[in-house]
Image 1 (cartoon, rainbow, N blue to C red):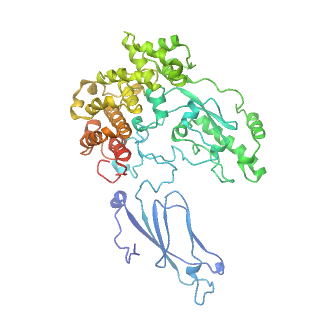
Image 2: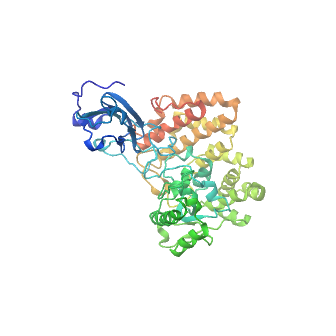
Image 3: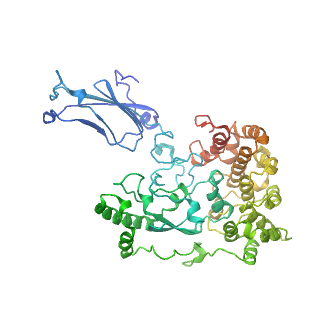
Length: 525
C-alpha cells in the first residue's frame, strides 16, 4: 500500500455514512524542544479496525483490532543530521490508512461464534441509523472469553457433583444465550435447552477464583462478564445483582492480591473466603435448588428436585411438561433407568409413549429410534410447555436427537424436510403471530426455521459419521442450500438482519462442517 499523494477526494457526509473500506487521515505535529535526547513513542488508543501508519512517508506500523491500543518507537525516525537527537524544527507528517471492515480476525473477543446469529438483541434499525452490522458476533454486552487459571463448562455446571473448592461467587441464572439457532450449538446446551426444554430453569453457577485471572498473568483480574468459561456459562453469568457482587468480590480479591506480589492465585483461599463471607457472600453451604418461574406464579417459584423413582418419571412423562423428568433420565443414564423407561415407551398412551421415546433418546438408547422416527414422520406443532418462553417442539427435539445419535435410518425423512414442497404443509402456517412462550416472531417463520435448521445439522452429523451416505447427503444439501431460495421461506428480512443471518448460517454450518472451508465470502453464506 503506497502513501497517497493527494487527499482531495474527500467524501461527502452521506458517502461517509455509507462507506466501507479504507479512509485516509493526515496531520502535522512538532517535537517539543524539551524532548531532545529522549525516547519518543507514537501511541494510538484505538483505531477500528485495521490501520497502516506512516511517518514522513515511511511506514512505521500496521495493526488489526479496533479495541486495543498500539504504539511504535519513532525515536530513530526523527534524529537529525549526524544522529544527535536534536529537536525537529519542521513538523512531522503522520499519515494513517484506516479500514472499518469487520471480519473474524479483527475483533479481540476471544471467541467469535459464526455459527449462530444473535437474534434477539439487535432488532432491525432504520437503515439510516445503522453503522455496523454486528448482531451475529459476540461483543461487549456478551462478555469476553479468555483462557484463565481455571475454567467452567456447561457440563460441569449442570452435571458435575464436584464444585470448585475456591468459589469467588455463586451466580444464579437460566442458561440461555438468546440465539435463534440452537440447531448449531454444542451437545450439552442442546440437551438442556432443546431436548429437555429447560430454557428458563434457573441454576446456581459457581465462579472459581481462577476464572477471573488470565492464565500466566499475575497482575490482572477481570470482572463482569469477562470470564474463563465456555460461551454458554459465560452468557448465563449476566444478571445485574450478580454483576454488582462480581465487582465487589473482584475488588476484595485485588486488594488482597496486593499483599502477595499482585498474584491473585497466591491469596490463601480461607482468608479470601472469610473476607467475602464477612460481606454477605454465601460460599460454604450447598446452593439452593434449581427452579422455574412464570409470571402466573407471582412471587413464588417452583423448585426442582431431580427424579429417581420410575413412577415419578412416568407421571411427568405423561404430561406436556416433561422437562424435569427428561433431565433426570439424562443424569441417571440408561444403565440405571433405561429399561424402566423402555417399558413406558410401549404404552398405548401416545403422550407417554412419545415422551418416553424422547427420554430414551436423551440417554442415547437406540430403543428410542423407532419412536423418534414416528414423531418426525408425523411432525406437527406440538410444544412442551415447561417454560415461560422458548418452549421447544417435540418433532424438532426428535430431529435433534436423531442427529446426535448419528442415525442413518432417518436420512430420507430429513431430506424431505429440506425440499421446497415441505413448506406447503399447514403446520408451517398455523403459528405466525408473535408468541413469547413459543419464541414465535413476526420476522421469521419460526416453526419452519427450527425444523429446517435442525434437519441440516442432523444430516451433517450423520454424514460425518457414515462415509457410505456422505455423498448423498452432501449433494442433497448443496441442492437445498446453494441457490439461497430456502432463505425466502424462512424470512423476508434483508441481508445483515439477524433473522436473515440465522437463515444464512444453515448453509455456512454445512460448508464449514462438511466441506472443510470457511466460505464466508460466498453469496448467501
